[in-house]
Image 1 (cartoon, rainbow, N blue to C red):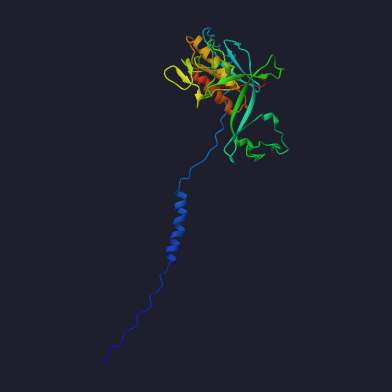
Image 2 (spheres, helix red, strand yellow):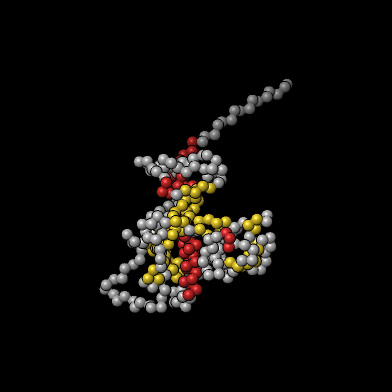
Length: 292
């Protein structure tokens, strides 16, 4: 007699309700135990010079201290030391933009821009390939700010741009009298020049280089250029002279950079770099008082 086959019993579906209930309880518990990172905004301002309280006796002045200070104004740079000041170094501010369309640079006088009621430029910079930068966001394309040195007889005089000869490495040339070279005719093989670096005196040559000799040619042609002199270079030359002359001062390595709230940070960095190169390694920032 043949055996009868038993039919397999149908499996019952697992009841997931208890598991889901457990997860519903665990998720809020885990979230309450999680440590989230807290974000904070720290407002940073240039430190202001503190005033001496009349209730305390001010420290006696050090007659040997240099008290060197460089003030950045909207139209000029000025060096102060020991209660006196050097002639103002007037400049013309220029903005250099980097165009994303052709990865090239264009330079503009910021005074030529006109703005609408919303603050957007109605005549934004135009790239060399013909494309125009966004009128609202064009300032974000500023790559650097140049300060061109001006010769002015007075603050009312619009001034004329100073010229200088620059090497292939963008270093301004100085003659034997430590003056800027402003004529290409002075740059010739055999001439002895210097730059704004310590012990930088060198002899110029074309097609050869070596110890104390600088090659000023590319493919047999002079590679030096005559262009607008940087006001940063003017300040650097003066700072080097001051540092060498007052090397024995108790604060010979100290310098204060004065600027107001509207001063572009690029200008402050430019002065700090020149001061550091001149030997002033202890740099203090201070806020220029209103109307200063």
